[in-house]
Amino acid sequence: MCIRDRFRVGLLPFLNALPLVHGLQDHPRVKPTWGMPAELFYLMQDGKLDAALTSSFVYAAKLRSRITDLGVAAEGRVITVMIYSQDPLDDVTVVEEDPASLTSNALTRIIFHERQQRVKFTPAKDVRAKLPPKTGRVIIGDQNFHPQFTYHHAYDIAALIDQLFKLPVVFAMWQGSESVSEQLVEILEQAYAEVEEDWDGLCKYAEREWQVSHKALVDYFGKALHFRLSPRDLEFLEFFRQKVHELKLAKLAK
Image: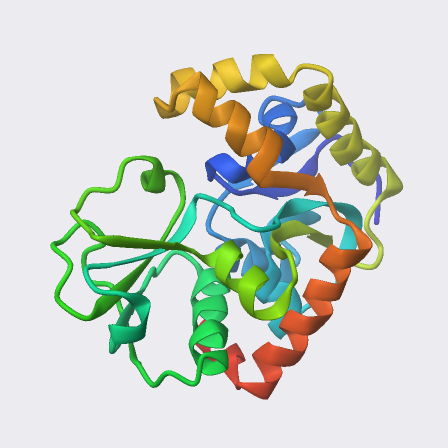
């Protein structure tokens, strides 16, 4: 890659990505582009980004170009990727998928396939609307701290994957071209290293911007999530890749 003053980097606007993007928002060597995972993937594929924090679904279905071992992962619970319903999961016959997340929708299909439970999948028309009977609704992101509808049952998708497959879940990672600059990788690593040195400062920033309690943020960033991918996380990525192709889930991106 030719040397340029600023690297074009795709950033996710979700709270769970904040530790990886916080130090890049105003970085003098970074030209940020904010977007959803699929949007960032297509921009990178078209040569309009040098790297992007984008989803595990993109990695599994279309592109395997991980450039660091930094990512967004959870084991046992994730808190912000949930299935809500009025009825027990065994009684769910329809699942409303969150249009914002290909990864979570694919994981949900894998979960129901493993449970040998036949359900109808449909896009959620309004993620804040009243939940119909026997309907599960996939919700990702910060709204899980303050759901906008009533429900009787809440199922953490990372917990369900752990129960069924004994694996963690990787939701996002840094991806880029084969010729990605080592300078850019160093910038991504350094931005996270600075966050690691001041987790309390990051939590205070998130508390102001997201209106989530400091206690909940400390638990979320410190216990529910981890940001350095382990060998078990890589095992999940290979499992996820196989399932996405086995169940023909790549079509979800179309």
